[in-house]
Structure formats: C-alpha cells, structure tokens
Length: 223
Image (tube, rainbow, N blue to C red; front, side):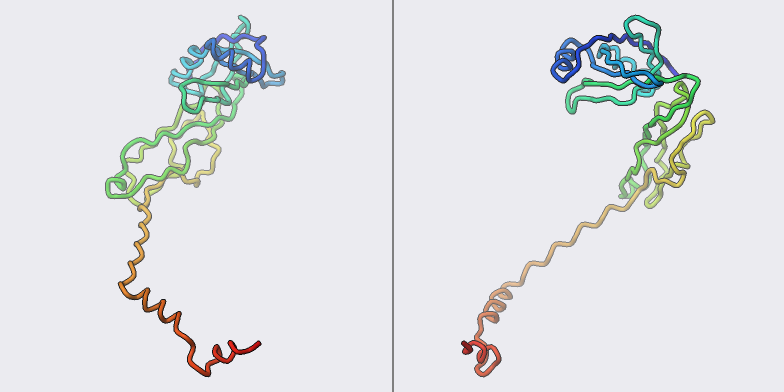
C-alpha cells in the first residue's frame, strides 16, 4: 500500500472565521488525534492533500504528516468534510496509527458491469456501498470491486461474495445483502372516470325527501 508525505503546520487559529481565512490561502484546517495524545490543530495544503488521495490506496492511503518539519507521523484519514457543491475540502481529521497494529476502516464497494436482469427490465438495487474491515494500515484496500454483470432478475449478492484477502478481515455478517436485481414496482392503475350522469343521479337521490310517515319524517317534528 502506498504511503505519502504531507506537510502540516501547527499554530493556526481555531474557529469558523479563522478557518474561512485559512481556506482562502489554499490551506485546509485539520486535527490530528489518537494513540494517547492530545488533539493537535494543524493546517495542510489543499492541493497536496487532494494529490495524496490520487494514489491506488484512495482515501485509505497512509499519510505521514510532517508536523512543523519534524519526522513523519503515520496517520489515516478518518473524516473528510467536503463542500456540498464546490470541489474543495473544508476540514479533515487525521488519526495516528501504528503500522504494525491492525485498525478498523470503511472500504467502499464498486459495482461494475451491466446486469443481465437490468437488460431484461429489472433494476439494480444496492443495499450497501461499503463494509467494515480490520487490517494493518498498509493493507487496507482502496475498494472492493464486485462484478454484477451475471445477475438476473431476483438474483442477489451478499458480503460472503466479496473477494477475499488473507490480510484483510471483513467484519460484516456474511449473510448481509449487498446488491440485488428486482422487478420495478408496478404503477398503480388510474381510477376510472365516472360515467356521465352517475354523479347527477346520486346527487338527486341524496336530495330526495323521506317518504311520509318514515322515521326521518316523524323525527323532524320533535321539539
């Protein structure tokens, strides 16, 4: 698994206003925590950070943070706050790791191929887009690729169908559903339009007076 170095500087001001000023200079506010140390507020270069995610490891790359020029601290990214519609990162959390100790991580699932069932009118319904794994920081997969091209209508795949790696333990239940091909739900049939004249007859019937001597007629005279 690839490792990258990334410079980080301490001493940044905290708070939303200071964070906005920092972003305008091309920096990303971040925090580093874990392994029994107090959280450290740092700033990293936005361009260098995004480049770090372009390795084969993706977001699970091991990033050696060079804090204030010191030797690299091995970290993994635990949370990324991205702008909702602009292509930049607003904040990132790094967690310190020991490269010899296994950690938990979320690994994305990429569904590839066009299912047979979809070509026959079905729809692909993903139930999960990631799974939790346990592995050494340098052994965490960037993603699991799952071929769905042979799925027919009513077929499904489960966690047990994911590719196996002796260095990676998948912690989710093997029976848990990943993806299926289903028949589209039938659209409800439109209600028939009333036949001309039916509404008028009903209205006239409701407006008719009760026959003389009926219960309604006798009740209406009571005080």
